[in-house]
Length: 235
Picture (tube, helix red, strand yellow):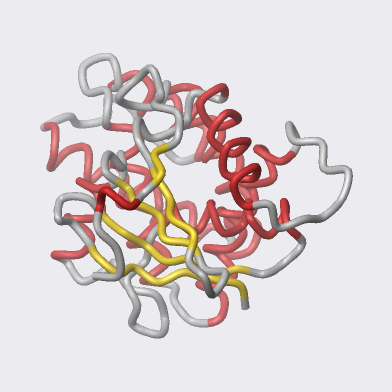
């Protein structure tokens, strides 16, 4: 491992364990519609199918009505979150990973970027950038403040800057983990080049791009320890 856990600078802790279901689900579904436009009806049908399968398998809940649109799925997931607060995050993450893996290739990569960019754009809309810079401390502090205010942040997250300009991200309480475990065990948690996929870091990278003006990529160094550590770097 490149760094001890004690080496990470922990950012402000969110005052909640899970994102607010409606705030999170409305944000993600809004961004998913970009992928719906890219892939067409096949994306929507598969996404809804896999999300509902996850909820049924994990929580024993069966939808009471025919769900055919992302907006209908959104309202259904919000409704079950009263009993299962993690249902929205887990079902959406699992369905996203599995659907994109099924549709993988160049378009699959584009789909991932569309979703991450849409979420990151919602964050940077709240950030006034007077000039492009690489003050990563300021960028991460602002990212944290915005995500907490939007009620979509993981409870804890930390980072460590490396001398080569890369950054290690510590994810000790990622709300995607349970869904990622399921997807990993089923063989869906892979990017086209074989690296492990991390939706949380995908959004962080797109935010870094919008905030700094540079392209960023990531690699997962440690997965499910139960924390995860990722490495972000400019490309």
